Length: 267
Image 1 (spheres, rainbow, N blue to C red):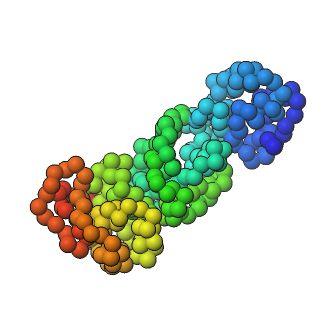
Image 2: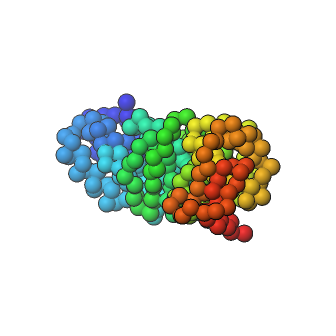
């Protein structure tokens, strides 16, 4: 039940009651019930407070309350409402790729989009200055995560090991293989070799092959012994380092990777 529920309350009173109770999100359906008005009247009231930048609507039917410090941003920071948005739809998710790398201290610069891994493709979100990209990931609910606290609760973030695998699995979302290698060079010191192998079990084998090669390339080969054993037991075919980049002649027998692209990590 939405806090502060009452009959014929004003939308401003409702928002104030929610914020006072420490809740900064609500749905149109909840507001309609709390206000005792029709859905049409509720949407009209919401449009008024959206124009006043008291509330933002990152997704149709889902609204966030904007404290004064975030009104210039035009939205709550994504980590403060993505968990609640996903929960409202009963969806598994985690923060991944460059956004996860940033939490682990391994992003050279702030990603332009907040990257969220989900079970199936979803449209991106644009809310004020906040941009959220959703990337489909198989077995999303089994990927190892940690929970990090935010002012509005906690958010699920891929572990360093799962982040490393995703970077090579989705290089187009990481600035290409050069960008992935750059992040891996910083992320490597946080990678636990045993946990890396466990994370690899819920990812395609080709990701583990490419990741092992890239970790060695950036000077983190000492983190790859367990992963190499895992790959050696399972890999029967060579995979290209870069998909769609030609056949290549050089090969890594250790990782069963065809080195068909020159990769360089930024210093």
